[in-house]
Image 1 (tube, each protein chain N blue to C red):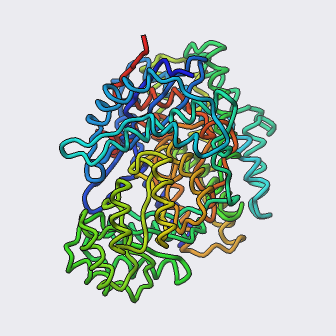
Image 2 (cartoon, rainbow over the protein chains, first blue to last red):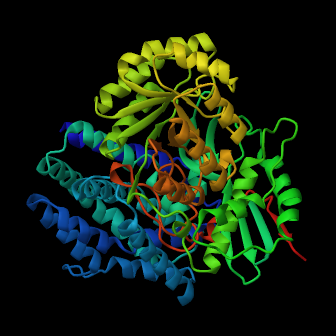
Length: 235
Length: 384
């Protein structure tokens, strides 16, 4: 319970900071202009387009008690489960709805791929894959935790203020419903992972500090400069 | 080969978290990037970090000196093709003017920025790596971590991260407040096997410098860097005699003349050499050679907030020097929210950084990142 609470409190901190940020408030209050909404959508697509690949990596590192859940999430993302909804396709539908042409969409796909390239190429700070995978698992499950609470609000804001059809916003509404379950499963997965690999609590806390030293949502959805202004690195 | 255009871009790249020492707290990098274009179209990049409390240069005075003095001088020079010999590096460095002026010890950062850009450009034009001129003597460079002078709680968190990253050497910024508690907590967090050293950035007077060394010696500190302000070699020699921790000079060592005077007075145990502070790779090597002849140990330091350009230059130099005790830099996205190079040259686990083999300094700079973080006072100088 201690581990679960420790992790969930960090997810809650990240989510609260994001929800109170200027970017999120602009998004849901309707004061933002179209360019802001469209950049947000492009960043969101870039962030999540390669989720199946990330889940595949986590599946490889997962202990037996967690592997089935991650495998299920991965198949769900790919649309290979009973529902048959491919999540990257939902993002592509969203991108088309805001009028991003093929060239812009190809650019987003390339940026998303470049993130994977960077992740695989840069020198590893951790000594083993179990630590790297824990950090990635924390980030993925933190996104699920946040989306289960805020993606509905984001979807409604885009419907109201960006005037997008509800059908094109399926990614947001799907996540707000599905991710309530995913968020709980995600926390269970992390706890099981930590126990399986025998992490010391002190090392878990350090990996939490490193993973969440920046607000991952603001950075990915609104960019580095927005995050720097929010944290007063830039005035 | 002539250089036909220079673009000088002061940056404002946010940090992931603020970095403080006794005299300054920083939240962004204010590096200046020099981009040179040669007559054959080859592009090269260099970097300068202006620090008023080190060389006396400010960002503004450094920009001014670069545009009005260095560019006006080098644009007339027909540069020789690279030769696989260090004398070529010295020749290039000697073409770049530096100067003293009121409040400025030397425009060394400005000189370093142009030197690196020239080396990168001229070597790339012949598809040669800087390692051709400075062949590496080791396969891996081992970097230290640096702990900012924030709260003790934050310092301990940083220390634990560095331990998890397998770093063997850590430098701690000290301020004269809670020094023992800070170092004691860090020592507890990292254990006895990690090398710890301290850096005061000149915040202590002589007596308190001696006192803090006496207090901290029981924590097994490997060196004390620039505890006192820029002082005479005789003062340093006295401090070295009285303090029980090996003394390292940093801000007191800017020019070759400083180095000679410090050596003559047997003033210290370590030199902290930094490429931007010392006026480029060639001048840093000259000081390093003086140090090694005199039996003074070397730390190859860095500038807080430096980008991949200075880090790459540091990597080449650290791999080439005969003997280097500590190396700093290559923090990349551990400190910067985004670095300027396509490939990450941040160190990895154990503080290890690999050799750079690509042409020039060995990195590809992304112009879109320079544009994104330009502080809007870019200077473009053209031969025509």
